[in-house]
Length: 181
Image 1 (tube, rainbow, N blue to C red):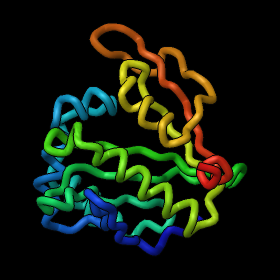
Image 2 (cartoon, rainbow, N blue to C red):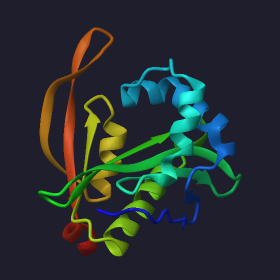
Image 3 (cartoon, rainbow, N blue to C red):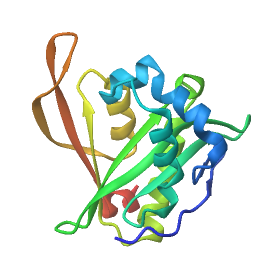
């Protein structure tokens, strides 16, 4: 899967675009947000220089697509959408999204997901999008189901939160199902 073209996708409320150097403070703020850390299973202790290099090289990666999610009304970066981990066996890629505190509860994540899905299924030959969502995140699961993703399995004891093991719900959206909607 060749994703050398990094599009700018414009919706009603969000713009998805390649990362810029000026985005570093806002993506760093998103990545340190306690809710983002919990829902993504991430750690807040990261090196700022490494982060700068990571986001500065996303446009050079032909096997993945990392786009900033920008609130169209304010011009503020509120998160990111990513497709990566191409699997040639079923022509699929993994999808993930994170929305920081300033972008939550306004439908921006749903619109960003829909914009990216539309681009991938209408402008590329990708056959499937896969994702996993922790079982303690029913809000995200509901959004994914509303957008057409279907549960395909569960990874038990995938992650530990507050001393208890949690499951990851595995989901998939096929090109056919997306285009039928």
